[in-house]
Image 1 (spheres, rainbow, N blue to C red):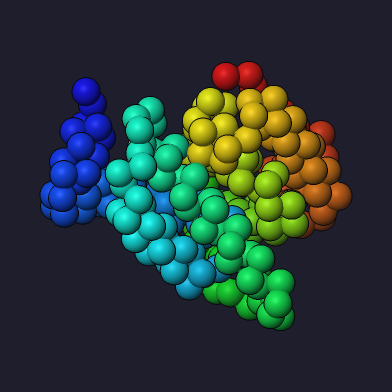
Image 2: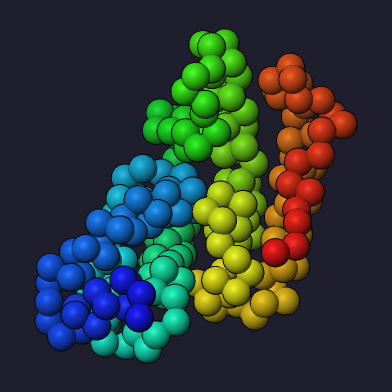
Length: 204
């Protein structure tokens, strides 16, 4: 029994401290995924909080497997609910959200010179625009795969999609991202050319 299973079992028996340990373990991952899907810091914080509350209330429905994937399924459903609610309200432009630049943090090498950091930041903002332009289902699978590093099986568990659907949507998402970036090559930092192959993908 791994650490997650021990903590989940304790949480199912009413140990709030055990559940809080799970929150500490996964709150960073949950927020990052929510932020990438929603493109909004406040929305991501709300979705993360709501998801942990839902997970706590339904912890007894967890029947084993990957707790991370189970939690991400709760989270992605919460994010989709928020996206549906947004359709009834004017959408906020990513250009108006200063926190969007934080999305690129995973791209940054802190030892870089300022000019190199600025170029990576610019690329991260362009990638954020590209990902936000994807349909929500494609956005989710490419984030879980290429940003968070989940396997196909974990993504299938987290999203409720069949394995074949995960693979096909990931392939389409990568193709759309590649086309988007090459279609905006004038915005790419100088070290990236139109010949650069992005999101070529690899079977895992």
